Image 1 (spheres, rainbow, N blue to C red):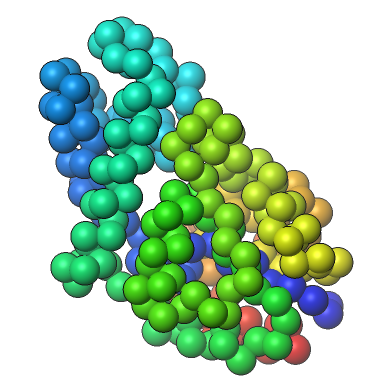
Image 2 (image 1 turned 30 degrees about the vertical axis):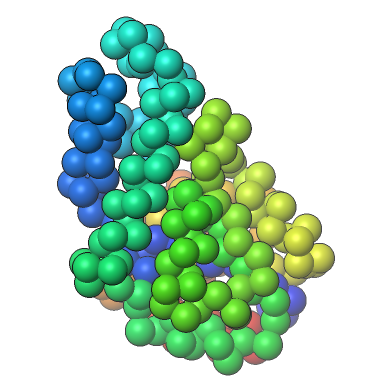
Length: 217
């Protein structure tokens, strides 16, 4: 298959995934600053699932404005993730260097906050290969675009005027999002043993990004 564009997920593909404990600690601080005590770890899971209604219900029960909570949460989660990189607690994967050899337009489509994605790409010196970056702000509209919703993938394809594209991700939801957008997918499993339960079969299964150039070329 000839591809004129390759899109990549971010966390777990380009950079290491953020610590769920550090994200929960960040939301705990948000609750404390609002004078409330809330289930931070559960709220992280709801945000990662794009379930704004659950977050809004929780905020209403605690007497907090949901929009204000999400705005504060976004700032704290962005700060926490950027700090993790500066403290050496989170790194980019070595095999990302392989994407530099690709001669087609490249993009990032992530469920992470766009500020985090852009900041970390700059921090690791990977910004230039990627012509478009799509993320998900912590707003109702942003959370609704989380995968498997194909909206951000479709927007990236439009940005790059792509006709035949491949999406590389490390989760079943990435494969589903690619399928929903009508494009091929590559499921990355760095451990070499794929235990990911997928409802839709990926077009390719990879153990490293080093395999991507041979697929595209």
